[in-house]
Length: 95
Image (tube, rainbow, N blue to C red; front, side, top):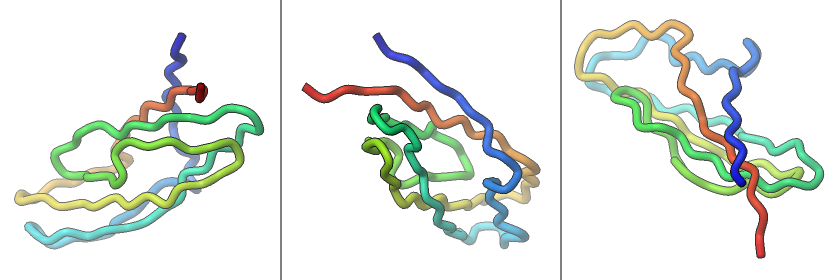
């Protein structure tokens, strides 16, 4: 049985790219942390036309963190304000 968790980041966890030039990419890093003491998780970031996450899919063991990068690039002038990009998180177990 899989459990799907969708969560919204607290304001302190929002990422701000500031002003970006059209056609140029800007990359920021952040850490995803699994605060569970017992459960491993699998995460999957969706495809998005302007934001690319790396890694897009992965596992995080209990009490561990994984460094993530997110790159913004658009060929058109766009304004993203509090853009919600849901990360799918599923509890997993290893055999």
